[in-house]
Length: 135
Image (cartoon, rainbow, N blue to C red):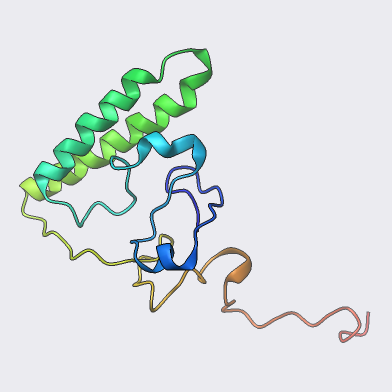
């Protein structure tokens, strides 16, 4: 359970986790709620246009020298949403809303986030320890 923007760990109770699509926001990114999403293929064009408008408002509020990374993050997301809008214009389909793994894209039932990092089930056999290898 990580922030959809920065991937910082977020505490979420199990009951809230079960009823969500797995997109959470840390305290630094609460103002992104409702306009910043990882999976955009579940949204229709009007919803994506609303996201762009909301992101531009958040961008306008991110002023000052200490907000450069925040502005870059918002601009990148605006570009991603606009590319998705262009894909919809070219005939891309809208996917049904379902919870998915943010790393591999599989359904959460098939991959509850265990395809990366510490939890990853390695495709390679484990190396023998130094003691087992005679060293």
